[in-house]
Image 1 (spheres, rainbow, N blue to C red):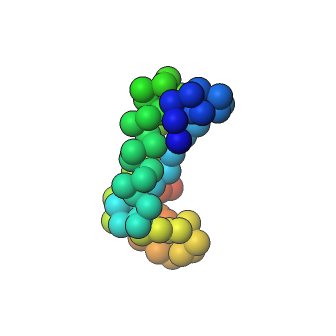
Image 2: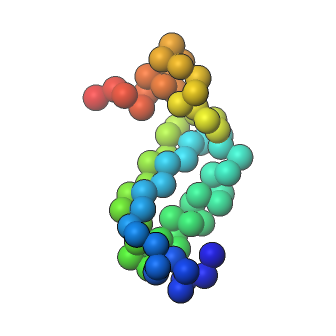
Length: 68
């Protein structure tokens, strides 16, 4: 995505995980978002994989995202 296209987007946040196969792309988009002033925040959840929110409340990754 070009910087010109990014500038047309509303501000955004990115959620990724340590073992997500799309993590590299998410981090690259986060860098572009920082550069264009559109990135609100990035969350990089350690020890979790792609679609970790679908693992359910009994999984360690799910619990880690909700702990204080």
